Image (cartoon, rainbow, N blue to C red; front, top):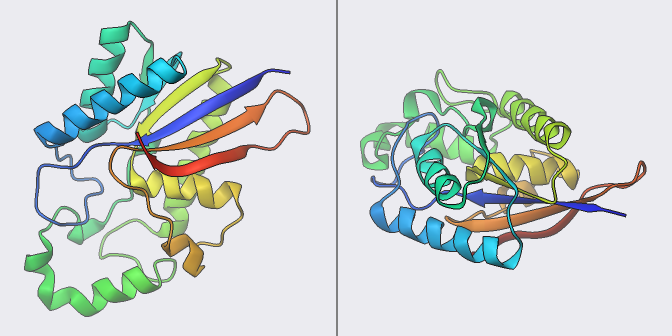
Amino acid sequence: MKTRHFSFVRHGKVNGPAALYGKTNIASSTRGQQELFAGLERLHQEMPIDYIFTSPLQRCAQTAEEFATHHLLPISTMDELQECNFGDWDGVDFNLLKHQWPQLELFWQTPLHSTPPNGENLKTFSNRINHAWQEIQNQQYCDHTLIVCHAGSIRMVIASLLNIPLESPLFQQLHIDYCSHTRIDICDHPDAKPVVRWIGALL
């Protein structure tokens, strides 16, 4: 029986102050790009990558496209893989949001029931990401698929596969670091369920 491997990799560290970066199209730092590329090289050596999906935001797409070109790999940009839209808070330095700190804390503590001003509801975000994940499974039947995206996007896939409620403290504790690797395997059998091999391992 064939097993398909899906590697979810978060982008490198961004070139900006501490903030909620969702829709904001901020670039990765030079070091972040270098670390991601080096990590993808190690991953490719361990298990050759056959196909790449990437978020369109440059902190993901820039290095993913560079890597794909270097190894002559097919790559698709998928808009649905983008990070959550944090609305009016998106990309704003936390130091400039001090007057909204009570609202921010409420969002962090109960994200399912508190949405950033003009932002994306967590349930809507979850539905979007899981639709993208289903599309990836339907489109690619190669041995090893790489998905370069965002911490929130990866957390949503994990929560869905492990039946972790979005309001659960466990969901809040899922940590996906920069340049980390989460792998999901799916056995080619009608009754097989996806297996989460590991979460947030550094490349």
